[in-house]
Every structure is written in structure tokens, then in C-alpha cells.
Image 1 (cartoon, rainbow, N blue to C red):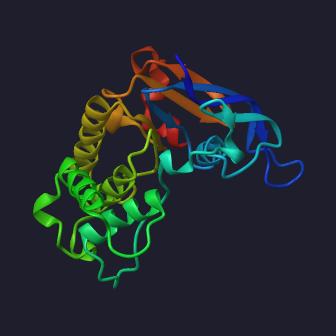
Image 2: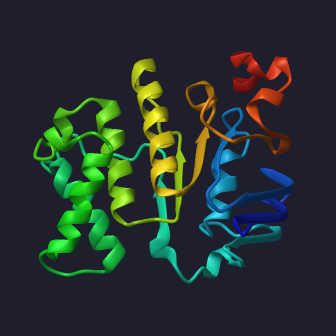
Amino acid sequence: MTNAVELEAVSFGYRPGQSVLEDVDLGVGEGEFVAVAGPNGGGKTTLVRIALGLERPTTGRALLYGEAAHRFSRRKTLGYLAQRSQLGSEAPATVREVVSAGRLAAGGLLGPLRRRDREIAAEAIDRVGLAEHADAPLRTLSGGMQQRTFIAKALAGEPSLLVLDEPTTGVDAESQESLAALLDRLHSDLGVTILYVSHEFGAVERFVERLVLVRRTIVFDGAPSELPGIWHDPSHVHA
């Protein structure tokens, strides 16, 4: 199996003597659905930013589909939902307009979208269950529906790798469960590789194939069912 993401002996620090990650080895195969969890400040976001080539490791190397991550040649095939993805509270953009921007980013288009681009955007909106809200201003929707909109925007770019960093922040428990089930369907239907990053993993635990726990280094990498009981205590993960 080809690895979509590969980190080899990666260490990283924003300042000399201050290590955020130490000696991280991680391989994520094409088509896997993997959760990356751990405490706030434990290095999760830094890990995915290195994996995507947005930061360069202090030591070690990061590869995307076999290429150096920071020089990856097919960036348009990456879908990245960063933390707190949102528009200004007064932004008038509709769901359709936000999702259509994913086609512009993918195709480098100027001017009106082509018919095929509009169809792909509409399909992405439908996949996340927002067809009835396509022309609603984003600011009028719940937090969970706004996150679905940004996932649809990423899907409109037809990514081979979808990375979501803390996608359920500020979202109620029911919406978290709904979002996890949506990602499971997208994984099954599209075969997209998914990295789901969060300080807690309860919502996706029954869907993911692997759980990676990060506390500066990787302290667990395996099936959620193999996780030692102490790690299922949320206070331990959050600590």
C-alpha cells in the first residue's frame, strides 16, 4: 500500500530548546481513516502541518505520496479544514458560494464557474446533507452545519487527502456524532484518505481504522479497541 503521509524520525520546535515533537514516525496509507488525538498543546496540529508541508521538520523528513511534503506538486488534491474555519460573522456568503470557492481553488479559475464545476459543487453540498440550505447565508446556520459547509468546500476540490483539525470545536454532542457518521460515509463512498485531528475522539472512535495518540511523540498507534483502558478516560486525554 502506498502511503499518503509518511513522517520519518520527525522532530520540531518553534524555538531552540523548545521541542513540540520528538522522533515521530507515522505512515498513513492511501484510503485510511485515521484519528489523531491527544491533549491541547501535545503537538497534534504541528504534526499535521508538517505532514501537509506547511511547516518543515527540524530533523527527519515528511513525505506526501512519496514527495517531500513542502515541495508537493499536487497541492490541489489536498483538502485541509484548519482550526476555527469560519467567515466573519457578518459575511453574506451563502453555502453554495462558500462551497463553489472550493472549485475556484482547485481549478485556479477566474470568472464564472463552468457547468461541470457547478455540478461538482452541488454534489458536494448534497453529500453533506445541505441541499435544502444551499442558498442560505452561512451565518444563519448552526455550528455543525457550518462545519459541513466547509467540509463540502474541501470536497469540491476533489481531494485525495482530507485533513480536519478540531472540526467539532464549539459543536454540540449530537452534531459531533452526525459529523462523524458523515465522514464515515464519505470515506466509504469516495475512498478519500482522512486524518481527523482532535483533543477527544469519542465521536469517531467506532468509525476510524486507527487511532494515533500524540504527546510530543506517538504514545499509541493502533485500533481503538486495542487502546489501554486508561486512555478512554477523557481527563487523561485532555491532561
